[in-house]
Image (cartoon, chains in turn purple, yellow):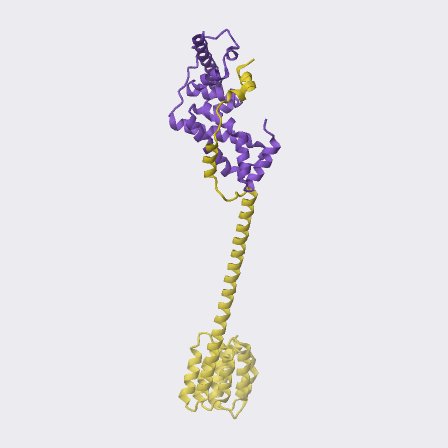
Length: 182
Length: 215
């Protein structure tokens, strides 16, 4: 848990020209932000590029941040935007997933608890771009479907149905992994 | 437990990717060395710039006004100097012995675009004291331009009464009646009654008296 008061102090120090304070802000946020980039881009090298670009942009624009208490969420927006920019440069359009429930509902509702964290992480990264992004934005970043919709240019209901579809797809992938293990 | 709640509980363990020292070094290389301006610094800077621009505008406009004032003063001084120069030249010409030179001086006065204040008085003095009748006539003609001035009208009335020269008086009576000077009415009657006056003067006085009475 990051201490918000400490972050506010660091932001003020950065604004006064202290680069070391920015290093401390980086240390506090880098891992979480790098993983956010990774979940959007599913590419280690691109995720690192996105992280670097986002932190440089944050440093250059920190004077314009009105409320230092919102630094973390402000930084996350920069990170998500930069990651999406890189993703769009790589993939011209995010392939839409079928809105219909083409994959059957699974009876086992706690399926994600029966796999290791590594397996779950790998399966998420293996999802198609749009499903992976919506799933990580909603579950990991805590964004609402409306916010996800505005990032991706979708309606919130589309984001919601795509999220459900992504979950089922993830479940299917994990089932296969488990079957393979058995 | 919902999927998102499960993720929320295990998020840290699910985020296996760690940034390396080289990631920070790559960022640090791109950061500018100088200290950054804060929004308030920027606002202050813009305020200073606006104040400086305002001061420059004030300085420039006051400088402009000052130079305009100086220019006007210089023009006025130059005009004054020119007038003084003209007056000196005319005075010099009027004091010459040759009548033609003095008439030239009077003609020159008539041609002045912006005559000096002293000119009407100079002309009245010429009418009064110049030895040549032709010069006096020329000065009287030149005085037509100043007939609207009260001091010129009074000066002419006084000269008419003082003058002993009948020919000059004829010209002055004609001049004063042309400018509709009613204050000479009783004097004109005296001229007519005075047996010592020439018939030409009496006749001119009669014509002038009729002209004035018609006013």
